[in-house]
Structure formats: C-alpha cells, structure tokens
Image (cartoon, rainbow, N blue to C red; front, side, top):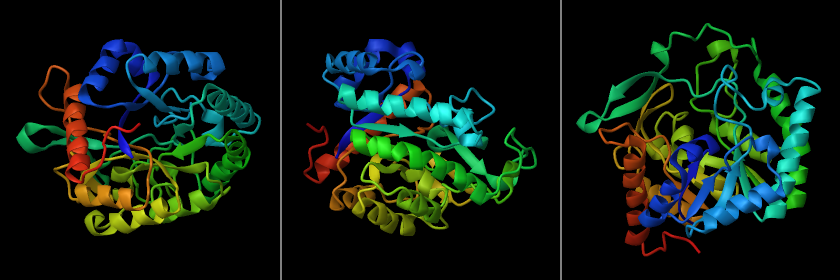
Length: 336
C-alpha cells in the first residue's frame, strides 16, 4: 500500500499539469485521475494517451472513476437509468460501462471506482473546527428536506437492492474476464429510515456492505473503502472500525481507501482532518497493512481552511500525515 489521491476530469481540466507536478513534488506517485471530457467516449486510445501523459510527470495511473458519480440524481447524473432501475435505459448504460471496463483492460489500467447513488451526499450547515476551519457536517435532526422526495419517489430497500444486483450480475463478469477491479463507494451518509423517500440507504451500513461484496462474488468486485463514510454509520467508530477493516481486508474486498476521520457517528458528525477526529488513524493504518491491503491510501473531504488554495493546501497536509505514518512504521509510502 502507498499514498495516493484522486481527481475528476472536470477538476483536472481546471488545475492542469501544474497539479501533476505538485503531486510529484509532494511525494504522491499513485493516482486516480480521469481524462478530461465525456467518459462515455473513453476508448483504449484515449485512456492510453491519458496514462502516458500522467506517466510523464512520474505518476502512475492506478484507476479512474466510472460514469457513476457521487452526485445526486437531481444534479447532472451520468447514469440515471442504472440507479433508478429504468428498463432499457439502464441496459444501454450498463453496456457502456462494460465497454469502458474492456477499454481499461486494453489500456493496462487495472481498476475503476464508482458510486451507486441517488441522494448524493446530504449535509447540514457546516460547523467550525480547530482554528476556525470549516467542517462539512451532518446532523440528521437538523435536516429540513427529509420529507422532500427525489424524482425516484419512494424506494424500498429490496427495490434498491434489485437495482444493485441487476447491475452487478451484468458488470462483474465483464470485469472478471477483463481483470479490472471495480471499487464501489458506500452511501454517504447513513440517513434515517424514510429520508427523502428511501426506506434505507442500503450501502451505508456495514451489514449492507457485507451483502454487497458477497453478491456476484468475484476477486474483481469490492469496495472503495471510505473509512469516514463507514464510520458515519457506527455508534462508536473508534472501537468498531478496526474489526470492520479486518473483515473486508482479510477477504481482499478493499481496492481503494479514503483515509478520512470524523467526530461523532451515526446521524451526527463532522468531517475532520485525519489527526483531529475520533478514530485512531495510526492504528487503522496498521490494520490495513496487517491484512495485506495493496492499494492507495488517499485523503478525502478535507476541511476548508484559510489559504489561497484551500483544497490543495489541506490535501498537502494530509499527504504529509499519511507519508509520516508510513515512515514511522518503517514502510515505503510511495509505491513502485
């Protein structure tokens, strides 16, 4: 395992090659960075040119994001038919996803991450953290939109599972044949039953994630394990997270790690810097190492701070924190 990071195609279009140089200067070698442009147009040549461009800066393209975003259905969603379970439309989108997976294999890119999301990432009013940093916050009892349905209407838990299983049964065999690992992000955050019409956000609980990885079983089907999101569904993340990492890690179902900390837990939390939350992050990193996890450890959802470029500055702090934890244990943080 080693330090890594992620960047969407729209973000890459804004920051350009300057940011690739910055990552190399900060010691981040492995990345998930998408090509600029419409992902439905990705083919072998586009992906190979992109990987070669990233390589010019001394970086390694470990994975990309499939057109199944974290954004909610009411924003510009790239695969509405899949997450809404629309006959015909979802089949066309699944065919497109399968073509991208095959193109990734042809381009020598061994993994892709994705979300299976309708509600997006609900949050309430941000709260102050140390030194006045602005923290992304979820207080379910302060949410004002809980009774407002999305265009999905009311959705039962098993109804949503049918959509997930329909997708996995068609996509995982293609990923397996192509030897491309698919890493799904949990639902962020866990929401109360019935929130915006959803009986349950089925991928927000540990039990749901266990069911997910055991559906369409394959060594190429697993998780983008967001430690912060998984913790958001727990009563006591500090005492619970270790065994959960062990369960998924020992089964080789962790394909990427969002190394994020929170204060709080189920239905009420703030997103923190890795050193400032409730979870013992050095202990968590040791467990990833113990179970033989072999991918990226990357920051995610950093607090907003007073800086000319808040996100880049906060991410730089997180890179340094992760690299220091590796070196304190005598491990190589950079990867081959």
